[in-house]
Length: 338
Image (cartoon, rainbow, N blue to C red; front, side, top):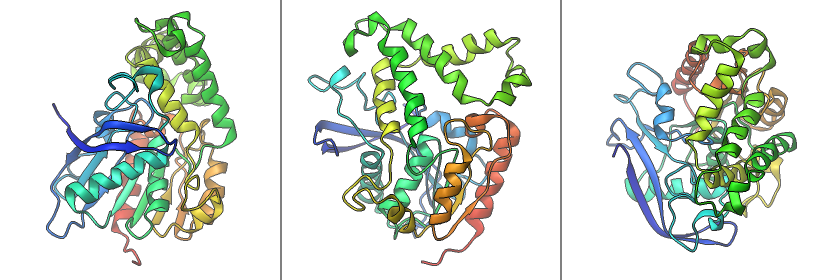
């Protein structure tokens, strides 16, 4: 296998539920230096696994394995420690509710207990990965030196909660879903999820200009079936629902450290932050990032001027990849004050 496993034992989440024999799948790139000062954490996103992050990792790039020790932890629910592979009684529809805060706490245990890491040079990520970057900076402000969240916000704002309700409804309307206790995949629901997400993943200008042709699709229907339905047919329905719940409830202040005071949580971030919203992102509009960045003491806002919508962070458009990579290089070159 191309990944490693961290086994912390039984883990109790914010929900009060305990996952027995929990594990965190992760992959590392590069070598941890003697000072343990070259650490980058790059969490995964909704439906993505560690291999889906590799487009931003490579020799000569900002996330350069010869220079940095890059840790890519998998989001709980994404196919590793998930409803689809957990033993009863916490399997399928009984998998515990897991928050972004829970994920980051487990990742913190990995870094400190497995590797003895005390400082993180950078946490970066796309979408729900970006939300984890914000959570890292709020949960461990004296540990995280820099963050670079792209196409993601410090909490899930109400409109995006609504978009995810469409994802959930599409799955749950399939009779084969059977309240989460299906024997065969609810393929009608999975295909429907693809159709729902297609409207939010890319911008109106992307579709108007038929940019899907640059990805090798010859018509709109070809794109909807080949790209969107094809992606979600590979997913497990309960895993998607578990991760949707995690995404909907993301909020860096929803924990004992901040007791729901969102502005306090943002102001508590000490990391040098480069916040990169997609200019035409329909999931995480740049207006929300503008509000959040103003409250982070050492933040700059750098919108990604692209019509690729939320997919600016998916590694599918070379120009967006170059923009993100160059921005990360700039951020990593900057000194930090603590």
